Amino acid sequence: MKNKELEVLLRKAQALGDDIREMESIDASEAYHRDRVKAKRVRTKKMYNQLMRCAAFLTIPLLLTSLVFGYLYLGEPKEEVRYAEVTSTMGTVIRYELPDHSIVWLNSGTTLRYPTVFNKDNRSVELKGEAYFEVKADHEYPFWVHTPNGLSVYVYGTKFNVAAYEDDSYIETVLEKGRVNVVTPNRETIVLTPGEQLLYDKHTSRAEKEKVDVYGKVAWKEGKMIFRNASLEEILKRLERHFNVDIEFHNNSGKTYNYRATFRRETLTQILDYLAKSANLKWEIQTPEQQEDDTFTKTKIVVNLY
Image (cartoon, rainbow, N blue to C red):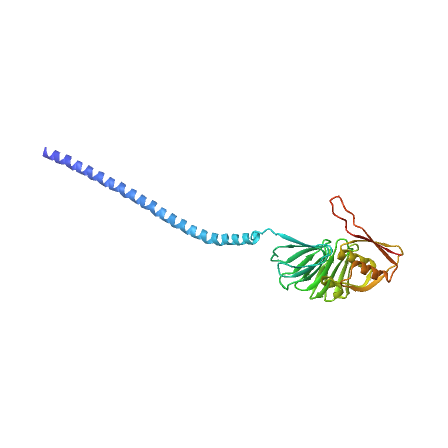
């Protein structure tokens, strides 16, 4: 009995040992598997972090480059350009200072349009009529004068006169000091030196450069009218603007007369009397007529040459 009981106990102990060894074997395998999975995760995370650092290293310069090119392409937001306009009414001459401190004189019946702030690229104005400019020197930014017929003048600092009345058949540029570049409507650039005049014919598109008496061309800003070998038609046109009248001229004889004269404080009738001394010239002042809005028409003078 005792031997049998002992044998049973040994078999149970052996079976229990086998179970323990099997369980230990299973736990070790699972632990080994868990360690491998954990090590793989660590290696994956390490590789991911390295890739992210490389991507960041490549992306940041690319991002900066994109930002730089975007800024250069788009630039700063452009501000709205605001314009101002100054007009010298018929029969008056005014002096005006521009935003860059350049000085301009506007002759009778002249309009000047300009931006209230000159931009970084150039200083630009639009002229209808006649103006004398004293441009503040700036060798980086040119000063432009644009006329309605497409002729433009640009300078970097000088004194010059531009006559561009819309009812005249020509545009006249006269240089007193410095250097002037005249760009014609067909894109030809002509350079003037002091004492030179460029006369551009609107109808023929021809430009002629010649020496002139500069003071005689710009004395109007001092209230003077100086004529040097001027035709009667030219003088009458100047008188119209200076005295704000309408002059109707009839050349019944077909003759031409040229005059050399300087007028300072003379009245219109005194000047017409002077012109009549050297030609068979008759003139008559017509009384202004009252219109429906209670205003009066401009004084009209009829001039006949016999």
